[in-house]
Length: 68
Figure (cartoon, one colour):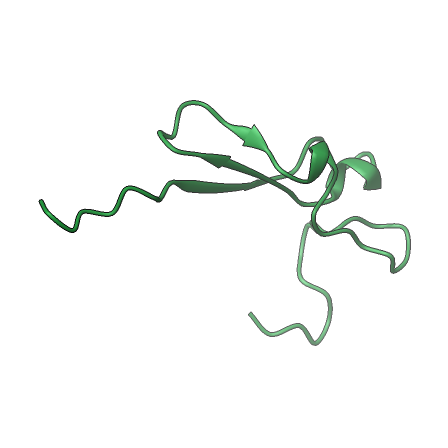
């Protein structure tokens, strides 16, 4: 195709650990062009972190009043 897109890929959002550690409960990003080989973004540091309380970004259940 003449105008076929050559850019594109996959964005993977993930957590690095279990719910035992708030540090492992922060949100990380990785990119892939083929879905098999991934490159961590942000120098392998979390992209989204929680600064409220002692919990990470991921929770077992939504906070009271949170609309999904």
